[in-house]
Image 1 (tube, each protein chain N blue to C red):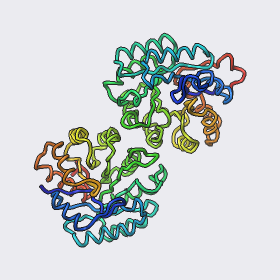
Image 2: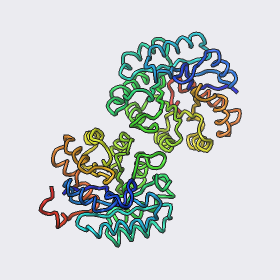
Image 3: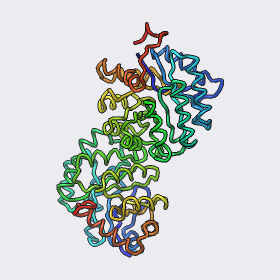
Image 4: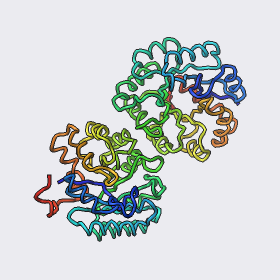
Length: 259
Length: 250
């Protein structure tokens, strides 16, 4: 089962009216790329929308394609610990989202700031789902900041998004140092992905595209040309995120075609 | 006041450095001695010429300049012993030139340089300029070196990007025997850095001619709250580092 751990509806690089803005585009990309499932977040949270409204849009997308999409909640710590806890309970507990995303740069806080994130991390641990971090931007969310958070919360499952963006070495070192850090490879070229495959155990790497901004096929191809054994490729391309999120099912609509 | 400036450029790629003007600036700023290095290699890539200039200036003013060598990492194994034999008192790794930084290159070329400096009881200075993909001056490079050479006297230098200081401070907390060089930075950050690190961890480097040493000193003096004692603290720390000793160690 191929799972893309990071796609968007309403990606802010596009506008209403652009085909890429809509969830149908993501589904077409998945079909063309052989991707069975995708984890999706609405992107309007990154341009000012409150978390509740953004997550409602994510739910609408998931409800439209329940066999293909899994929701992650955008959580915005500056809205307050109580609001975040309630939003996590609503989206993960009630709606069945399988994780949350924190975008510390967009919301202007440090990803390892106890006042901002500790209540969120504790709430997420209770639900036993991962936290996906947009990373690579100082001083908001570097891989090392995530590593410090991982040390403080060994029970948390933390995903360093975009392989640290430009900070790929930091991302690799953080994953090597902390057992509860995984690396998402979205938005990275084949060279960076191959380096990560050589440096980090395959159990800690997760395929993602950041579509529609990123390209599913190119990222998948980077994994397939990494030199990893087929079993390890399967872990990277879906097995690891499935285990992290507790995804056991092969979507009924794709059961006969999954790679 | 009298203090040691641990980062002064003997030549610079974007500004002329005149020997007499430099000495006058040092005198005006109370800089008793300056660790001197050739910053012009960022564009010239002529490491030999830069080191020759630094050694020559230091020979002319042995009481004012401490020669710090710079080296192309790929030539470090052969070149560093020659530089040490000629009187170089420390080595500085510059990251603002070329495109040489990779995990393997750090392991293959910088880590052995660290071992050499450890054996020589001299400091290895890493200037965290910030070069893609180490955007903004990440701690990946010193982290690899520090893990591989735990006994090395390691100095983080040119930590000029305020954005990166969350990682620098965390690195300093994780490795309390690493020296941190302060520069012209936002006052709030300087206060926080000194409060968190303690004055016995800090060095001060102006990177003259990039900043004026007297102004940088004033900034740090005000941030530290040490008043007139700051000069003595900086001098003692710099002398300790130059002897290959780490903070907090006998």
